[in-house]
Amino acid sequence: MLFRKNKTLLGLNIGSGYIKMVELKDSGSVYTLNNFGMAALPADAIVDGTVMDTTAIVSAIVNLADNLKIKKRRICTSISGHSVIIKKITLPLMDESTVEETIQQEATQHIPYDINDVNLDFQILGPNQTNPENMDIVLVAVKKETINDYLLLVEEAGFVPVVVDVDTFALENTYEYNYEGEEKKVVALVEIGANLTCINILNDGVTCFSRNITSGSRLITEQLQKRFSLNYEEAELLKMGCPETQKTDGSTALSAINEAAFSLINEISKAIDFFHSSAMAEEQVGKIMLSGGGAKTHNITQAIQKSTGIECELLDPFRNIIIPEKHFDLEYIQDIAPMATVATGLALRKDEAVRK
Ligand SMILES: Nc1ncnc2c1ncn2[C@@H]1O[C@H](COP(=O)(O)OP(=O)(O)OP(=O)(O)O)[C@@H](O)[C@H]1O
Ligand SMILES: [Mg+2]
Image (cartoon, rainbow, N blue to C red; front, top):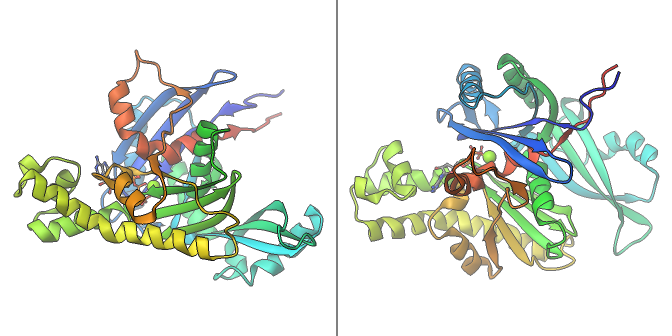
């Protein structure tokens, strides 16, 4: 008996700031949003992509699923940060089975971890543009220890982890689903999370450069804390646009937010400059698509556009997804949509499981 073929999975994005869940319904040619919600995590529950407080995360997942009345148990989740290495490498032309045999050996030169400690995966991109006797491959290595930590979390929360993905690829998946056919040749997907900023540059829809910046929107909060002598919660509120509750007037607050975002924006610009100066850049980035909670920072798309000289717009993860008006407050969903980008990409993964 075949069942569950092509059913959707629950997308569970365990971010260091917020847990996000997205559930989609596959209605044939189009997806409909069935459920979406998020819950904050304590600041030290996940540090640099490493699980530090299992109990807090498990209870946040369980509570969020209860609040959203989630029935689905089979999930797709993801990992990000220093446990994930994504590299574009070049090898002499060979067939896929030969790549499989040699990839372990090759990877030792590109992965800064013991090769026995990582799970390896690869995707053949095709012949190299400058030397057709070679081919380009995207190599992905994820630390086994981190995968196991996330699997345990999810199982302890009562879910069945069917797919463990990588944030960067989930982001790409969301972009492709929503912007297919409209893409410029080279597009930079930039996701600003609480503690991590992922940059994924696509050339004709395929990753050609990927880099993490190990800071995110929390850096802005911390700078506001220092500047106005606020506690963490007060500074978060100020960043989110509630200056009237704070020790500063509105326009001082806004210019402080812009200044605090400066170093992050500078890092993003430097990463894109680095890409442009490398051999990986066949063409300049035509557009930056911004997502993650940090994309909601006041004036940030304009500031990135000014700093890089490249058009920057918010990525809408629900652009091609139907949001039933009677179940959702559309204004609220659009407001928090930047935080749903990774979880949506995970929810778009198919449950290919075939049980006999
Ligand atoms: N309205 C807003 N204005 C400014 N910043 C916001 C707003 N809403 C959320 N944020 C910020 O977005 C960040 C959370 O974003 P997100 O959920 O994408 O991160 P995360 O996935 O939990 O973290 P990471 O991926 O780095 O582990 C927080 O730092 C939060 O302060
Ligand atoms: Mg995130």
